[in-house]
View 1 (tube, rainbow, N blue to C red):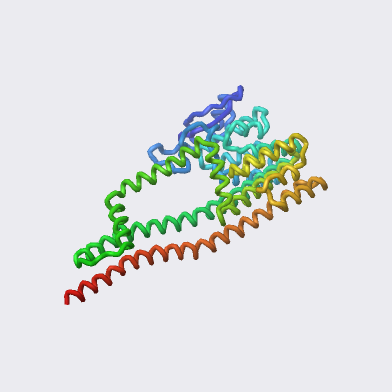
View 2: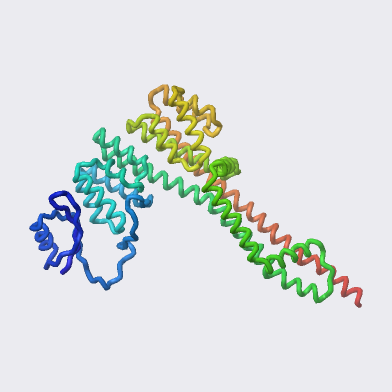
Length: 412
């Protein structure tokens, strides 16, 4: 039987390879005789068998690979549970390595574990991977410093879970209007591209005089049918131009960020979710003993909207020269008066983390309500829009019928 193994030699160098043995225990014994400490060993199996998609290694540098949020969530949750159960860090990592199916994630965990054996702290080892956001690294580093790594993993789990929920809210809030707009566009294309041409031939054969509305829709139908490629080209050029501007122009990104905050129904969701994320992370970091300046900097980087992030940066600069947080926030309208007041209470009472936590809960609740309002409002609005589109097309098709009747009457 052939076994694949990952082992460490006497110089703490990683060795990977394959070995023939009658059993896994015999393979381990043979490797120990060679002076190797086995970290992972699996049966090689038949090379002709197809590999599961979960067992495929898609290659690339694992240090720059993005780690999915769901994977981070599971990692933090499992580590928190094992730390609370009294399992030491290295053994907990080994348990996760043995249970992980994704080969890329397994490689990352193996290297983390190797660095732990070599004397690095977990936060130091995680700094080598861009897949771990700085927010989590700071919390884990603080947990290592105060000896409460289990609480640190718990805090990371809560932040990751809330962050995923907020991201899901924004996606659902924006995807529903986009779906309805796409539905209206598809309806216009079907009516003008397939329905109107049929009526055009009928009216043309009868010699009826077409009203202006019908002629306009017929002209648009002809343009859509004859120059559909031009429509696609123009739309592609617009989308491509927006993508280039968004990548290259800071002013454009800032303008879009400000505009989104002013859009009815959508703007409140973006602002509330951004402030909820800021308050949640800031609360966790300050309670972990991380300095205010660093906490605010990390919380700022976690905010998606560029304008809100810019306002937080101005607040941070004021705080660094001695201005209180609530005074600095009061200069920017993006921060609610209640947020400013609660932070003032937190600063004066020495319970800033608790105040920020309460505001995070409030903004998350407001964001939920705003998403529901958007969903409730978009359905009747888009129903009216679809009704108007269909009504205009129907009227344009019916109006020429009166001309047909006139032609028939005059001929009789």
